[in-house]
Amino acid sequence: MSEAGGAARGKQEFEDGLEKGDASVAAFESHEKTVLDRLQHFLHGNPTMVPVIVLLLSIAVFGFVAGGNFFSAFNLSLVMQQVSIIGILAAAQSLVILTAGIDLSVGASMVLVSVIMGNLAVKMGFPAPLAIGVGFVCGMLAGTLNGFLVTRVKLPPFIVTLGTWNIFFALNLWLSGAQSIRSQDIDATAPLLKWFGESIRIGGAQFTYGSILMVLIFAVLWYVLNRTAWGRHVYAVGDDKEAAELSGIRTNRTLVQVYAVAGLVCAIGAWASIGRVGSVSPQSFQEANLQSITAVVIGGISLFGGRGSIVGPLVGALIVGVFNSGLRLAGVDVLWQVFAIGWLTIIAVALDQWIRKVSA
Amino acid sequence: MSTEPILTARGLVKHYGRVVALNQADFDLYPGEILAVIGDNGAGKSTLIKAISGAIHPDEGEIRLDGEPIHFRSPLEAREAGIETVYQTLALSPALSIADNMFLGREIRKSGFMGRWFRSLDREAMERIAREKLSDLGLMTIQNISQAVETLSGGQRQGVAVARAAAFGSKVIIMDEPTAALGVKESRRVLDLIQDVRSRGMPIVLISHNMPHVFEVADRIHVHRLGRRLCVIDPKDYTMSDAVAFMTGAKEPPAEALAA
Image (cartoon, rainbow over all chains, first blue to last red; front, side):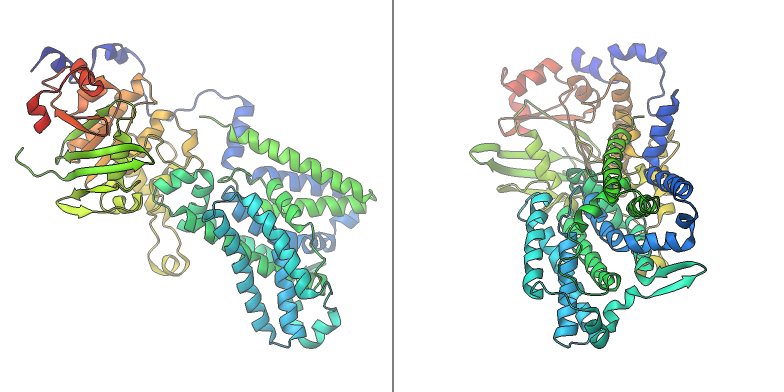
């Protein structure tokens, strides 16, 4: 046994000084923090608090500015009704954005599915439940196509869904002949398609089944994302795909499933949209994809993936609705509503960047 | 050596285009030992380790675990066979909690109705086990097991990754440069951890550039050079300069080491 080898066993000379030092390496101590640091940490742990505070503040402010009309239970339930379709699309969008992707095709696939449902049930006389079922399958297929192109052909989600957005829109115009299916025709043949337009009254509030559906969809997704392994995998894939893969997650399979589920949620939104609009209108919801992204971003889900709570986009959609309703009741021109939402989006992303820089 | 090796590789070949990363490489790991793998940059250490941990598929050659030939198609399959890897990048999900990370890809579901039909996770069980595993390794000064990994220091993250491997690895643990990103104190902690894990009888493959660390903990040193195993040396018989000379080709390895 040589001198050099022996000396190298065990603790080494240069480490002697360590004993005098602080030995708490793996201690998770918290050191002095400024108020701003604490806030940053708190928001890092509770990313949904920002949109919740903004929502409560905006309700309070508009209640003050716009007067009693705004605060009425009826008006607040109306806001929910107005944002229900964008809210449902935002739920679908959230899943995709959590994986660090983006889905520009949500609006187009929703309208396409509503046209498919309308054509089958009203024009071709199939039973409404069958038409709705076929619509759901088509929505899932549309999402699966996006997922396939993203994972197998390895194209960026932005490009894939930019393409399918146009493709779905063209298909929708072809299938519908750019003609709406009128409300009275739906009533005559397949009233089930408009079921989500019906409502129940609770006190002064009037909740359409569509707004209840929106809340239900968010509740289900919350459960799936937070209480099932699949949900954890969605976050892990969006956070760091390579790490997720090495941790034994089949990342591509998870991604395809995410796009497929997003497609299904859009298809459910399609059914609800027929009730909301009252007819099947191929030209409706043209900006729905961008509005859904706005709701997701305002809701505090990071565009870089892996961060944010699914509750956020619901709150985000409500914030947009409250702003629009409040500014309208206050008699402000529509253009300032758009102006305000624009700033809100930019501030939300800036805030997200700041929260992500959190350190121990 | 009297005992049979737990993990062997014979004649591994791997090409990347025209680059030969592995050229008839051999490998042996015996039960209960720490085998260090050293080699110059580009010698093919990483490729060798990836082949063993299932991240790549060698073009030729055979890998045997407990004498049985194995063909991993993914790291997942290697894990299922009992080979855990602590990657240099750690493969942790920064935004997820410590407990979530430890159980990523092998979550525990609740028993009964909620788990069976609604696939509900058993969070209490996962957090409890994560806490146990971390305290086993003396890492349990962690206050909050649901703390996001990105809020931990480098050494703490390494600790979580090692604890994850130690908790689930049943046959072999591979560690890729576990001390490369760490300071002196944190390195010491991780080296103690490695020896702690070995003392439970778990064989460890340690890839490192840090000669003092290698010579401190390794039972045998596998010197990799030009895509193959050059020799295996005992750290008690050679100096660090010898090892460096072998791996850079400055010195011919002795004949008895070649045979090992």
